[in-house]
Amino acid sequence: MVLALFSACQNPSKPDMSVKDAIPDLLPAPNNQRPAEPAWVRNAVLYQCNIRQFSRDGNFKGVEKALPRLKSMGISVLWLMPIHPIGKEKRKGKLGSPYSVKDYYGINPDYGKPDDFKNLVKAAHALDIRVILDWVPNHTSWDAVWKNEHPEYYARYKGDFTVPINEHGQPIDDWSDVCDLDYGNKATRKAMTEAMQYWLREFDVDGYRVDMAGLVPNDFWEEVRPALDSVKVPFMLAEWQDEPRHFNSCFNANYGWKWKDVTKDIAAGRQTAIALDTLREFLDDLYPENYIQLYFTQNHDENAHNGTEQELYGAASDAFNVLMFTWGGIPMLYNGQEEMQQKRLSFFDKSPIRWKKMGKTSFYQKLCTLRRENQAIWSGEHGGAVEKISGNVPEKVYAFYRKKGTDRVLVVINMSKESCNVTLNPSNEATGAYADLFGVSTVQVTSEMSLNLKPWEYLLLSSTF
Image 1: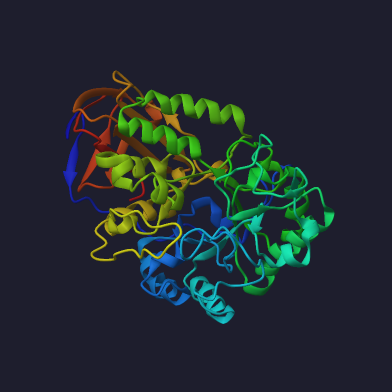
Image 2: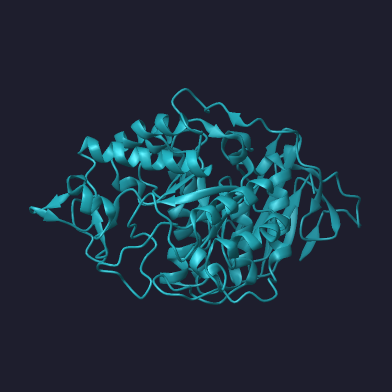
């Protein structure tokens, strides 16, 4: 990459890498209508763990052994896919879907015993890693404990038990292994609330990633949040993007599905970098101020059903992971991304990750450290606003600047498969000296930047690294 109108010196001294001032245990809600937010959310990095595939043994102990490695990489939140027993009736594959829950109070015996899970949580907490559970409130397996003992908890469609009903009132036929719950029944709501309280109280988990949160009525989430807070204030993440009221009823963050779709389209050449501006405008109009989304280039659904990171992003993978860490949301890694694995992990059968050299560890360590140390890229109101930097090729090059307090970050990404020359015009506030996160020089940013960028090349400049 050629930089004009910059001055540089080699091997500059780096600022102190100590963690920011101690963070209180709990932050007040951003406004009176928003749920309380655990303080650690502001600079969290999530790591989704597919327990079945994470180790050869596919159990809690296999995850616990890896905690020091995850800590050293910079992971602060461990999201475990559902840990409950899996139904056998109408099961898909040999092992079934983890999202076909048989018992909300039970633990999948393949993963271990309750004490094994408690030990995992304690070990994570000892390393200052939080643990959130994947929670499936919309449906259970067909042979679930509740269905046998409390059939009144379940929905009916044309007079009979049914697969889940989508937001349009239609059965989701390919979800044939699960049975829909009825939130019109107060007893169902009470039972679900108590089950969610149980894991906070008895196992000290730190929150929930809620599967298909939008298929459960929003007024239930309004009811359940105070009940959860009475046990322990959790981090609540909604796997849903189409209900802005979730940010007021219960959830601290939701899924950036549209971000994932737009970035995949850009990587494939179906859209240009300008689509990110359109997306930002849409999200800002849809959600309340200081909303937080989860951004990712891989998760269990994408990997199993649509493709590996290489299949979906190809040579653009690193560029969009840089964007994921800096654009304003919470970044999330799916287990194996640090390995650069080119394998789709089976959804219904055993298909363990092939751990070898973990060649992307250093890349993610740098991004995680920046996320931890530089307040400019923290989430929601705790980070700086994304200020777009104008340029002469906006369809190819996406550039922005963020500032919070004395911390600054400037990002430039060539979002095309072609080399290009670009001239950018940062604001006066954005000018000055930065460290190049993936380089060895100090860069002096001026009011006019001329860059020659290779395909998918990125520049990540920080005042704190």
